[in-house]
Image (cartoon, rainbow, N blue to C red; front, side, top):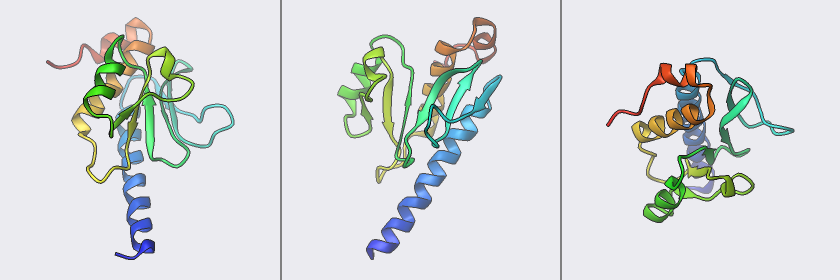
Amino acid sequence: MSPAARSTRSTRSTRSALARVRTICLALPEAEERPFGGHTAPAFRVRDKLFVMTSEDGSSMTMKAPAGAQQVLVASEPDRFFVPKYVGPKGWVGVRLDLRAAPDWDEMAEMIAESYCLTAPKRLAALVGPPAE
C-alpha cells in the first residue's frame, strides 16, 4: 500500500473513530460538544465540565476514570491506554484511537459513560445509571 493510500485510510479511520466518540458522548443527557481552550479538536462537556477531550489530530481521546482505573488500564494494555499530559496526574486516562485494531466500542461507551457520571451532577448521572455488569 502506498504512503498516500495509508494516509487516506488512517484519516478515514480517525474520522470514523471521532464520529463514534461524538455519537456516544452526545447521547448522554445534556452533553454538548465544545472545543477546549484554544484547541479545535472536539471536547465534550456536561454543565460546562469536561468529560472527554480528543487530540488535535484525532488519534486519541482522554477521559476521567475512577480512582485506580488508570494504572490498571495502562498496565493491562499499554499500546491502547496511556497517562495523558496535564490531566493524567488527576487520574484521567488516554485511549489511542489510531491503532490497527479498532477499539472495543462497547468498552469505550462504558468508559465514556463512567467519565460522564464522574463529572455530571448526581441527578444527570442517575439518568445514565451504573455501568452494566
